[in-house]
Every structure is written in structure tokens, then in C-alpha cells.
Length: 69
Picture (cartoon, rainbow, N blue to C red):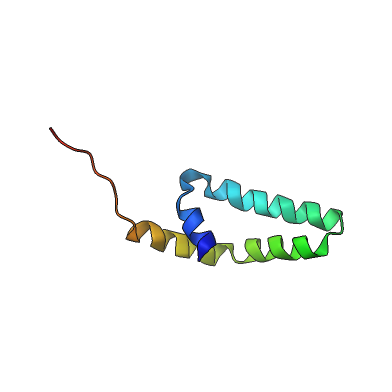
């Protein structure tokens, strides 16, 4: 849930965050850092569910409106 809440605040940078997770996974694989690779792979694998939850957070959060004077 924490990842989805954070993702809901990223706006247009959501796909950049997913790309970063995938690149970090690839780097860990090349360096044989298995524990870190598993963590990043789990993040990338769960991405569709994370984005679904993030959209729920966005719809629940109050929207700021402009004041009309």
C-alpha cells in the first residue's frame, strides 16, 4: 500500500519509476546481486496492481480548487 500511495503522488512520472525499477533489476542481475534483483523483480511484477491501487488513492484524495474572488 505504501508504494501505491507514493506512486499516486508521482503524476506523469509513473512510467519513469517503473522503468527505473526494471533497470535496477537488470543491473542487479548482471552484478549477481540476487536479493536485490528479487526485490526489484517483485516490484516490476506487481506494477499493474500497484498502479490500480495508486489510482484508487488519487480518487480518494481531496482535490484543491481555485478560489474565486
